[in-house]
Image (tube, rainbow, N blue to C red; front, side, top):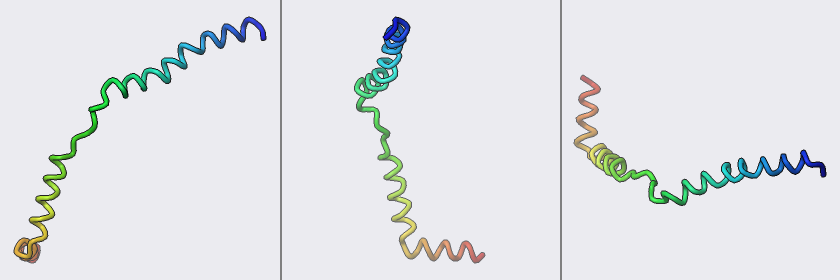
Length: 66
């Protein structure tokens, strides 16, 4: 192989290391940064329990009919 090919390979290595290594470093550096959905789940649980009661459904039907 000619010298140009070797120079090209040597110049490619830092870019590949950065392209692969930077996301890996960010992932392993902060593994605890997962989204917290506890508030959303609590909200949805209260909405489904309220909407499931017969009195609430009847009130919604009356509100729609009026």
